Length: 117
Image (cartoon, rainbow, N blue to C red; front, side, top):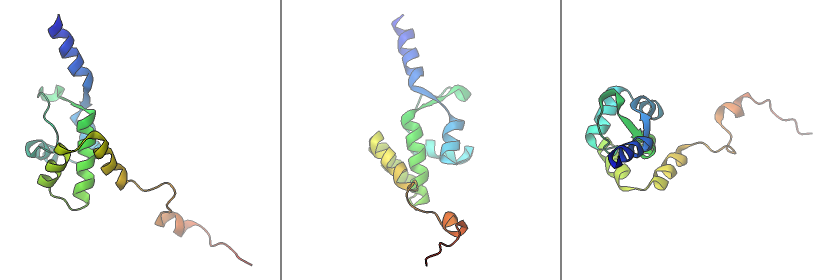
């Protein structure tokens, strides 16, 4: 009975299918497979199409996308995502998100000029 409980507990922490991670990181199946081979994501038990990934894996995938967009190589991403905490991964992801207060180029261009008299 202990074996069943530990398996159930492991399944609860690994809830994301690979499609979720690929969509979040905006990568195709081949690139995702490369990321797995290079160690960008922590290893999880392989179960074919039933393989599930943890919240940490999701953070790693999103952080890897940010780092690659900033010019890092896949190997550099693997070294970074494997070595840092979940909080640091979240900071990497958050640093790439545009601030809600910062105006974007599209909003500035579409707003009518203000009149000052």
